[in-house]
Length: 190
Image 1: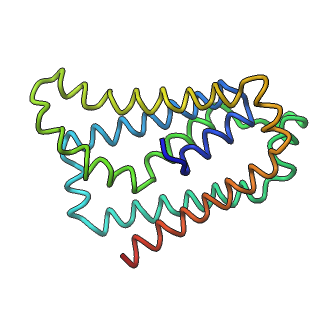
Image 2 (image 1 turned 180 degrees about the horizontal axis):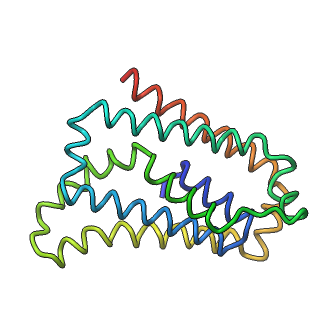
């Protein structure tokens, strides 16, 4: 629930395509969270952590993706509102791709599951317990970002956000690029 690249991308797709595009982005993100939960459950997260070259490669690929999204946001011409006025909205597939990629290429999510979530995996010794371990974070993430998309697309809120769309694009671009820089720094020099 903390602000970061996931929130930024859900906001961008909500502003650019309304609640439904934001929700598509949210549930694609949640699918990525579910994949990490499953990876942790299967023990692959521990293997990734023990293979630092592979882990660092994934982290750097994630940083490149964050930087690319940030660059796109910074170079958006006229913000989301101009795209809406000209009929150029992101596709459903783009919203889903961005949501899934943000969750899969964010090394902080893998570290979260490794550090905290993996402690609960040992307690899940039944199939129903294991399903609960995977579905809980997936549903919580999807429901949270769905709520964000619905709140931001409210008729009283959305016009105000769209009026400041260019500023929001610029700020989200800066945040995404700074996060990419932080990932590179922590991957290479920490």
